[in-house]
Length: 422
Length: 177
Image 1: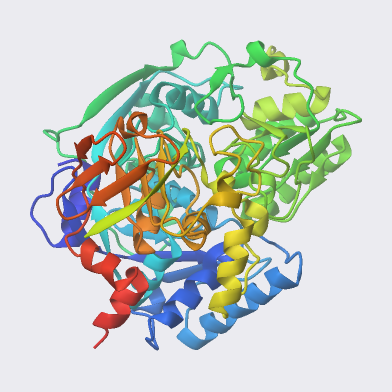
Image 2: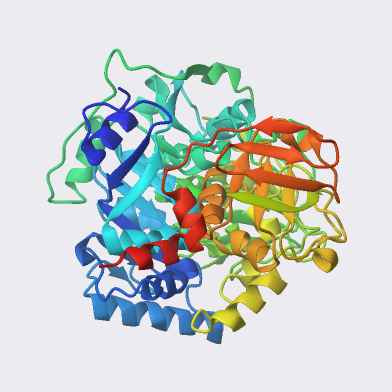
């Protein structure tokens, strides 16, 4: 069996499972956030049960509306906090304590290899980076998980994404993922799992790998997963005291498909043109496209290495006079580290606004909403029509390097010119 | 279990941002069902008219019991259940599509509304035609053309009971000891 099949078999109490088989699994972690938390709680109350199945398995992170933007938002967060007190949930991240849920779950060691995580958010797939089964569900299902600790799942057949070769800056894992999505399409992995393997993945930092599992959902995948290796174990040792089991795909595992990629085939930094994450083109094809906003952040690309690469490009320079440049660290921990390294000062000196850790203009939640006809280049994960504001606004997706280079010129720009000396 | 209704034909790639825009997610008072339903129903598909994949007159003419027949990639995107709720609260009783994305698929069923994926089905229907879905037998029939199509679903056996109970929450409530 593949890794995801082994996890689901174990959690369903079965010896073996096959693709498309229906199983009922036990849930090790359940995450709600401010955007759908109050909705989940209302559904849980409708069920008429007093107590959740296991408060120690629930993680609550306020992340979409940080700090609260209006009375509706504040009211819903109050409801969530009341529930947290009432149910005795310890894993609660108040404004200023956590960051974006998908970052916090990994950073704080809440998700362990070989376990299951569900969240009321499609990008819950991010946590598959630790070799866990991690997926998104709706609020009705989460209410039932809160009651029973169990969930039905259709076992996803595994598509193996094997990547060989070296990624040399300014090429980043985002460029690779946009390249992979171009081949898969937005439904290429529907009801399937993406398992990322190969020398390129082995060489990547945990942060870079998270870009792949994060955007697995953009191919329709149930989940994305990476087999645990020593790098992951070393990372987790600094994050948790809990013991964990290291599972791998069997050598004779059956994959529904194996797709081979080589970094040599990615000729230039990639940009996904609106309105689909799978619409990747080389940056030179869209170079010069005028932008109104540049956003670096989100659960896809708001980590320290992303901010470092942005700072390397922005240091000592000024962003375009007429471009709104927004930079948002993915968590308080990332924010603090960026402060320590002087990255935040670099951003402010360059003329960017730096926001508190939150989802920001990845979606139409709270900050950096786009007006009619505005064009944004973003490090986030979706560029659907109307995703971040007016339906006529356009969103291009790219790496932090490409977005930083574009911020300087006020138009989509190739970051390679900033790396010629290297 | 049989569902009969009038068809609304949708195009491809109807995503969750289109079905229910992010700006409305924190609206709606969940403590009052009637107020909540009204808000969710009227906030959905807010940009219809500027999109090619949803008929312009859908919001003004949709009626209780109507059924959407869509092209591929229906419900792509977010886990926001409001994307499914807004269709239900407008009266849509089922969605049939060439393909349906996983979270929307689960969310819509969980509201007690069947979501049926059958590659190629969208080419067999036009807006205004009559459709009959037989869940037990696994068939979809176009009453205007007389053509019938078989489908097979990969969903738990208890889903039919859940639909009859009115959705996942009422179904679980009835099972609470």
